[in-house]
Image (cartoon, rainbow, N blue to C red; front, top):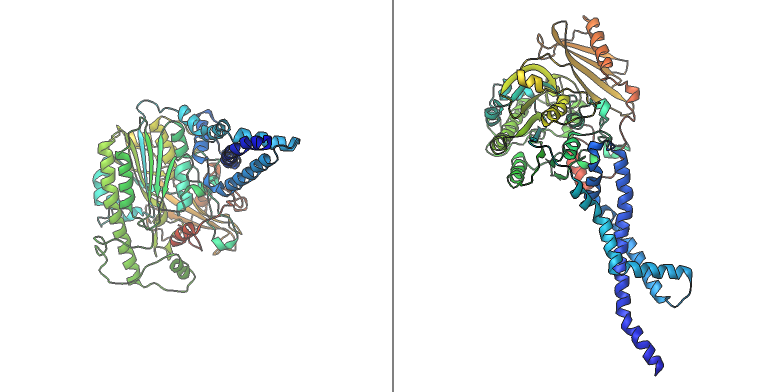
Length: 581
């Protein structure tokens, strides 16, 4: 009778013991998320340059956005399973008088009850609450910032910069309200280093995001190093809401371009400018936060393959030729495996212009809308690089430093600044200091650009010497360096070609008088070695030159993995297998 009486409470307790074990397993799941997430977050935060007081909040913001991280789901499930086994073991051995069993039982009882579970929930989501409570407020009257980058945009194919075709009619209407820079120079002729310069105000060999690596090469990609303070980070730490929408997989958080961005939306390369501009406009129209915004829109419609949509295809191309280019075409052409006829090349130029016309139809009205609805907004519209149509015997981009790749459109609208045209030369590395100046924010002293605000206000100023480079830390390292600067009253471009596949015998130079020879067809380096030497010494003095032997390893090797979607998107735009983007 007494035995039956003793077993009744035990049987009644069984469901509660099982429930405690299950609750303990959930606590174990959360603990494992917290453990692995904290280690990963610590590594990421340690790599960042967030020691400055003005950037300290970014630590909590990163923790809030990274926990719990689903990338550690397998580890978390394993932790939950282990906790469940230990909890069940502790219950099964509850009558044993053993220190180890006692510790297991204590843990399962504490974390198997609601207070223990509540503690884990608080620890996991505490960063989110702390980030929300400590988020800095923006200064009163702080302007919004909209940054629009059009991939593969040549200045000399832009109607409001003198091109004979009306490729940008909608944007031209609103561009006259802003400051149109007639000579803006990109610091690199392909996307990743050029965009990195736009966000860090550093030349490529200083920010380190230099080379591309084929997936099957065994070499590492070099992303934008986390130690650099981007424009997005500066604005986020100043209280801005941040959003990025892009369809270029080379510009994404995986490769270091999400620093400081709370909402980064990455789309397949085929998603067009109209859809992305509409999505950003919808986001802005529904935005009701009491803080300024920073929005980055990156569209790739003008990038090959040239496939203008219906309504735009056929505007100029009446040839009926069925021919396009992609990374394989570019590689085969440069390898001498295929030829491109003059008719095919004209077809490509026409299709490219039609892509520009379509992009204009999306971007122009979007800028008009933002200008009307959010007048207190700084707007930057820029191209990252151009494209080659046999101007110097090549196609694609990334290989050379001639103007078809480095002369890009740049328009900036700023509150209180009247529309005007500026003929003086500027650089893309000046964008960050300019935005920071108008927003009243400080930037790191390492910035290499200068604020264009005085030039925008007066319309008058000296040509700014513009460095540029391509190549990177391949094996062996190779590099083409260049500079465009006014010297002895003339605007010169000097190109230094060193240690490349086409120049194994040493350094070769190009020197071009851009005002007398805008197509860069006459190399004057042998006639003016003194000018070559003077321009090269200027590059060194400004800290714009890094020796090729020092380039290897200048960036931070990326050791992550790419899913099939990322590889497919990168390959389609030429980032994998021999052609930069």
